[in-house]
Amino acid sequence: MMTDSITSSREYDAPPERLWAIVGDFSAPQKWLPGVADCRIERDGSSEVRHVTTVDGAQISEKLVERDDAGRRVHYAMDVAEGPIAAMRVSASVEPSGSGSRVTLHADADARAGEDAGPALNYVKSNFYEVALDNLATLVA
Image (cartoon, one colour):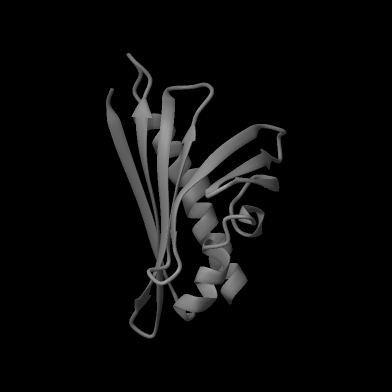
């Protein structure tokens, strides 16, 4: 199985705590992630899964792998039902940068057998990650 990766990051003139309050809220991706209409959290013991409904009605389930409030990092994973990507592992982090902050979004994607995940990941980067980072700029302006 072949793995491809993407990373997008942006600097903000806002304190890390302010950005982490948005980025680190696993239960409310609709605040800043494009195309998210609703989110429902399912907890089972120490396991947490968010079930996202997109604006076009698609359902996506993302399992929280790790949330580190002190380090301001969240990691989650998802299986993808269709297309060239079989599974993705995603991280979002907020760190101090100068007098403000840097937010970094990263994804590793496993391609389905015989598929190339690169074009799909480039679409995610351009139409999802970059828009999410733009949304954050508006929220903390």
